Image (cartoon, rainbow over all chains, first blue to last red; front, side, top):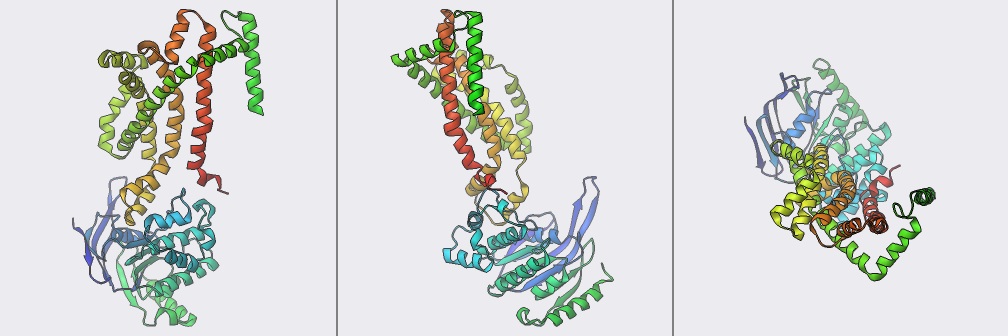
Length: 246
Length: 245
């Protein structure tokens, strides 16, 4: 078993997962990932797109160091500064929004925190407890928490899932702004092509289980200048390509 | 209001029962309250209450802290659970009287032996409650703390302890009443002061009034602790639940 996690230079993320298997409760082993190899340059945004249940979250967990039972190596940008947004917000119910963020980022400057809350429209909710927040708000708090530590690497697990369209649209715009203004290497996991095309510099298409990368699609136009038609066109193009794989 | 009616009803039944049983077997409320006042005036009541209360608090604190540590260990580490479980079952089923008598034989009729005997009696209950809490700890929050590299001390204080709070409150509640009952036995058997000792003396004199007076006085003290200390702590610890919609 080769599960090395090492520290790379200059915000570069290098993923080399040769094999990952799970053991089911019945004792039988089945393959989840095979030859997941890709690179992300400093402050590049990558998107892993694949059908539900193909093992996307498993890839993120391996990169985050939460799952060390795999074959391969991960070289992550700068140790320690990892920000992650899980699929569920995973906030402490007994701490306010403010305290939840401060728990992981005790040394954040007050004006930094204030501007983060402002961009994410959380100012009014600083002193609320998570049980008083809607799903969308809680998701934003989780995002604020991940960004508050000033991460070198940001992992986002389906950040817009289970939000209604209008809300997803708004959070998508906020996310784009935040990523744009910071030099953070970001890896996004989603099953929604639209979302990937709007946010990413580079898209990795995954096959169904056991997941393999079937295509790597670099997006030439910078995120901020992509027009609606262009996005729709790219999405259509990719959907045609993947219909045979999913 | 309901509580007041319920209390009045209790006093009425007590008074009626005392009329039937006669003042020798069951003195009425007025007689017992007068006895309390007399004991209070001499200062004896407060001294005995204080001594017993100090023993209760010492034993309670030791049992809660040690029990929490052991319970966490057993709830989180499988091998610790397998080693500790048979011991726990033995301790749970050992009669309080046996532990007390052995403690006095081995440790002499000392304060330390007495307090430790009470603490050991309470310990297994705390361990069982906290172990249950430790088993129910949310792994998703665990992972969150690991990803964000939350330091150990902070992790315990902000992530683990709030999850254990309901179990600790339950253990504390039942613990306080259990501990004071056992303290009385310890005092009866091996101490020369405290409520338990006084009740022993009253028993030899067949003085039911004095027995009831001391018992009632101490129950009142526990009631005050419950409303003035335990409940405010509970409200503070669970304040985040209150505001939930």
